[in-house]
Length: 351
Image 1 (cartoon, rainbow, N blue to C red):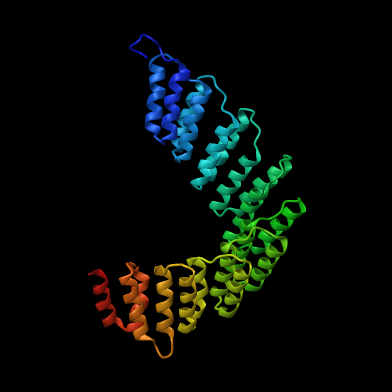
Image 2: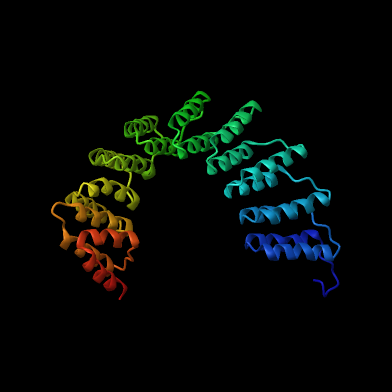
């Protein structure tokens, strides 16, 4: 085109910027922006925004900020999507201060925040375990007449759950219901996690029942949270009950749930039950991983009497299947078969 004497315009050159952005090649996109400048072709706001969004998606916030400055210097006003992407990128890096700085910058340009804007700020606070700051933003959102959606409330509840503040998590759940927002499975997972952190198995089971009663789209993760909570307090029977409850709902299990289910039985030395769980999960096509292997060997080591031969057999079988044991497996193997034999088996696994 150039050899034929034609001068590519901005629309033509921006196609190359867009192609580089789709390929996640920021260097190439920036190079094409520079070529436009060298050819005295002014980029449009669209070209700037494509590049800014690409930088934020790849968590290159400093480069995104640079291009935003260039965009404003060129006389363009960034739109809400630009600022939302910058705030979201800051949230991904747990950088609350930068997220808030971009929120203030957005206000200077007269751009009104959206639900997405506030939710990203909430998420940044949640990732930083700053519950009070998260509450401030949620309350500010409501004061400005912006109705939080299920993602906003879920993020707030999750922030409370991460610090084990069950009362606060339940407060925001109740407020969500008062606002006519229906909780989803993520909300219930967060509430159950909050119960788990404080060892309140009874409340975890109650929240699971409420989730079922409301018809929320449940998955193995929610049930796994309750099973994990039961495991932490050593309530093996209740863990099994919740597992059967999950199966009755037609929800398929996965390795994380099975390992959580087996753990309390393992600590009790009930290797027979752990073997049954393994047989059942393998019957469903779920392969043993290093964590389940650790749990099973733990059961053999805690059994009375210790099941040394079984521990060695299951370890050898895992090696034959190509499983690469981690340090935790070797440590619990030493308890089950003795240090000397463990060292011999370690050498076997590396050969």
